Amino acid sequence: MPRPVWSGAVSFGLVTIPIKVMPATEDHSISFRQIHTADGGRIRNRKVCEIEDRVLDPDEIGRAYEASKDQLVAISDQELDDLPLPTAKAIDVEAFVDAERLDPIRFGKPYFLQADGAVAAKPYVLLREALQRSDKVAVAKFAWHNRERLGALRVVGDAIVLQVLHWPDEIRSAEGLAPRAVDISDSEVDEAMALMEAIGGTDISQYRDQYREAMEAVIEAKTAGVEPPEMEAPAEPKGKVVDLMAALQDSVRAAKKSRGEDTGDEAEVHEISGQRPAPKKKAAKKTAAKKASTGGKKTAAKKTSRKRPAS
Picture 1 (cartoon, rainbow, N blue to C red):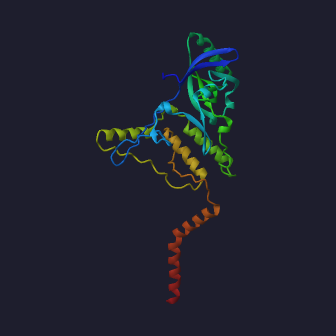
Picture 2 (cartoon, rainbow, N blue to C red; picture 1 turned 30 degrees about the vertical axis):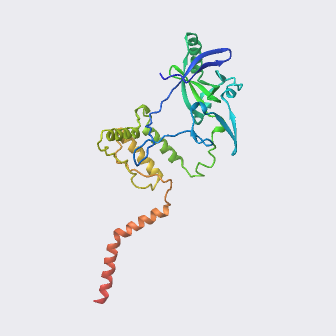
Picture 3 (cartoon, rainbow, N blue to C red; picture 1 turned 60 degrees about the vertical axis):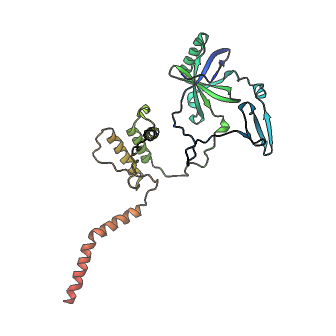
């Protein structure tokens, strides 16, 4: 397990559970260094005082709030430590709510809570079982890194997880982002649901970060002094949609075929544009096609009818 990032206690009512907090996730992204492209020299960031024009040592650096463009208000570490935060040493449970009441958009980074010592074992398990049987989550307040935060305690496996929650005013409004009124028929919705059923609930543990794997292959090759492997370009969409319903039906057949089910015909891949052609245009196309197929016969007939009077 990783090192704890915080130690304290979970408090609800008169019950206190000593805990240690550890990150529940880790980042596997590939990080890069900045270099000077001309000679490969590494670029370093230095903290320089703009008044003295010299690089500062870490113990010379403090913090300040920018009250205005020309005014900085210095805040010391001691002043921050002296703030009257009741959640500075405890994760204080404020309420228990149904899990479905929490919108996932509010979820931030998750942390595992570990019982700290033998005395914490029983109340830890007690809280875990109560949350699990009631299908509720505990909404709590806590203070980390000089700010108070909101969190949700929920059960994952045999552990209690502290899920950081965004405050309500941190969620931006989605007003104006959704499309305006669009005509959607019940049959189109039914077909979309049929596509969802055909795709199925695949185990997401099978997915992997293909971009990172490709980048690792390039780095490994260049480190060994050989040419990087050629990457297969993603397939381009075939054609444009002429009918949303047709695109949905073809997608259902393609999904069933990928699972080995017999669909009886081949699926055509469409690029969804969200527009359906007017019936008149379809009729015009059919008429044009009919003229194209019979045009030769009519032309020959006209030429024959013109020659007869001349004889």
